[in-house]
Amino acid sequence: MELVDLRVIGDERGSLIALEQGQNIPFAIKRAYYIFGTQSDVNRGFHAHRRLEQMAICVSGRCKMIIDDGVTKQAIWLDSSSKALIIRNMIWREMHEFSEDCVLMVFASEHYDESDYIRNYDQFIKEVRNGQA
Ligand code: T46
Image (cartoon, rainbow, N blue to C red):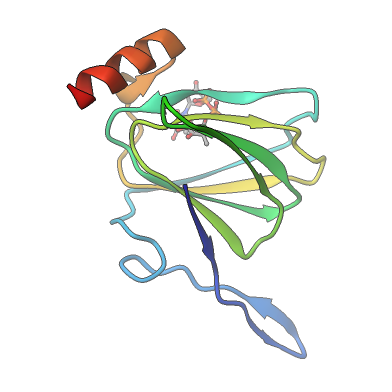
């Protein structure tokens, strides 16, 4: 699990965070998307990606990320606009407990490709074990 503390540039007018490919984003960005308006009783994710790498930041509000590499499961609160979570490939993720004001911004290393998703947990574990063989 890789959490990155983003540098906040602040002055009397407020705060600013700069995201730069190859600096604090460790891959070339092909896509960005953001998730907002998710009800607090709704859970999202429940999949892994075969190749995709991503960086997720709650630029407003918070949500809880469950990150699972097939061996270890961790819960991480994304609750600060200066906290970024790097999600490498072959990591199962779930998002829970969205606050009403949550805006989850995600930068991705690839274009959207449904065939890169593993949406079944048993299949995910199978592919993790095959990768380790
Ligand atoms: C992830 C977590 C953090 C697109 O058409 N283009 C896109 O770039 C994305 C991300 C999604 N979609 C479509 C696919 C589905 O029909 O939007 C719909 C919702 O996607 P999904 O159910 O995969 O959304 P989440 O919130 O479960 O997961 C998303 C990302 O898909 C995923 O890569 O890591 O956010």
